[in-house]
Amino acid sequence: MPNSYTEQEQLLIVLFQALVNDIRYSNNFIFGLLKEVTLSKKVIVDIDGARLELSASHNDQYTLHINSVDALAHASFISKGDYLREVVAGTITLDHAISSNKILLKGALEDLLGIYRLVVGLLVEGPTSPHLRALWDSFDKNWPQTVPLGMLIDLDVQQVSDYFTDLDVNAEIKNVEITY
Image (tube, rainbow, N blue to C red; front, side, top):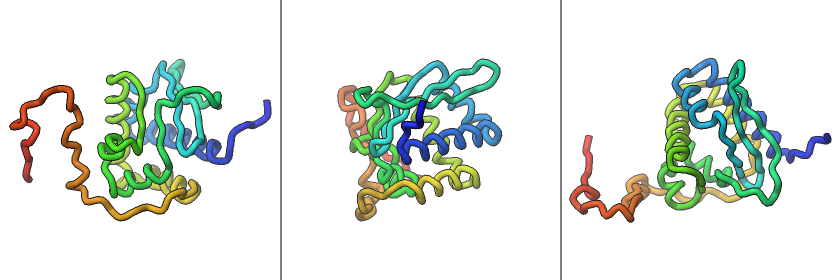
């Protein structure tokens, strides 16, 4: 079967495989989160139209499976590379990117919370891990920048104030401020 992956999809395949191999040997906690989130599940990732289906199995060892995707299949994770750059650079928070639909996630709440924990773990480890930093630098250097990044948004403005509006949370609880 001929290779039908786009250049961007090929880059994502290399980066996903390198990410799994890196955390497999360097961070047991994040690797445990990865297994928890991915084993026996499938997700379709769409970044700037580069679409891949990811799944994982654990026979003798953890294996990440990456497949091409039918154009009509619904993606579970949709974003633009520029928005990912903003999150990694710290110009917007992950919560702001999700609440403003810069990152769209679809799935069961338990799965979404697991993915969130995994991503936060990777964001925390990224600055101190030379391997994660190199992976990010490779993405940043090789992924096309489609939209010029705007002005930096003040982090105080990005706080998600009504993330669960349907829960009817008391105003005293919603407006609690924690100072350090």
